[in-house]
Length: 330
Image (cartoon, rainbow, N blue to C red; front, side, top):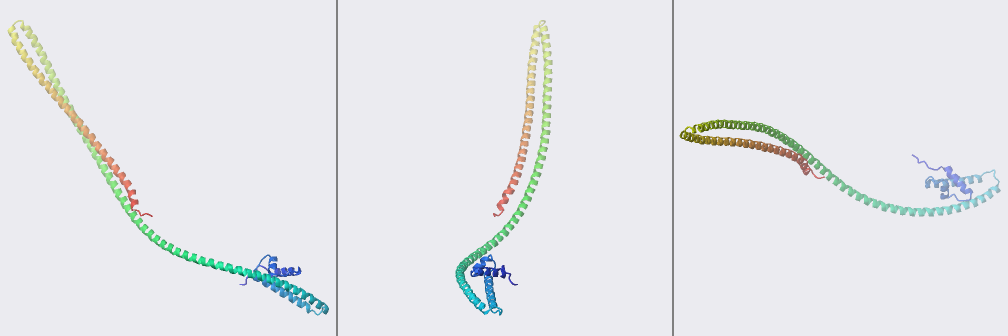
């Protein structure tokens, strides 16, 4: 497909004619400036050459016109020769300037090409270096991919291990819960047994106290009756003493013997009362001991429950602490 130029021949021809009428040579730089520096340099130079050919053809066509006088043609040839010579001189000068500029442009272009070649070589070296870095990065990428795959496999193994640990911890928690329930049931049964034993001991102590109290009361009643009897005997002895001193002395001796007997019985009653009081105190001490044993057992049960809660807490903390140790470092 033909390339479309950014400038038309008529615009270039108009610029050349304008410069020619001003007495200036239609050089490339002058024409290129007038057309606004549009189009390629070779295209514009070809259009300037076409304009010059067209002007020469016009002059030659005008010279061969049969209607013109010979003298006018001769003078016109002279004028055209002068104009053409001047145009050629200016064109040659413009061509020399243009050639000089083109040579300088060629030198500049060669320097630019050399610089571009150096930059291309530098770019090629950089490309080789980048290619080496690319290959190194590809090798590192492959190694990283292999490491990532290994890490994924280790992560999968760690996840499986953690799931097994979670199941084990869940089983341990269930066992701990069952143990806690068993301990709680045993504690309640023990409390029930302790309460029943304490009730039995309290009933036994109360029964012993009641029997001791009843025995003491009976002894007191017997002692009161014997005291009254003794008082009556003493009174009778006093009344009879007046009648018979001998009888009185004998009765007094009997009264003394009875008093000694009574004192002995009172001592035995007091000893028996002391014995029952000791038994009551021993029963009370035994009840207190069972109470302390019950409290100690309740304390031990509470301690066991506390240890179970501590173990559950340690298990809950140990699971997240152990999992990172087995997890590979990124």
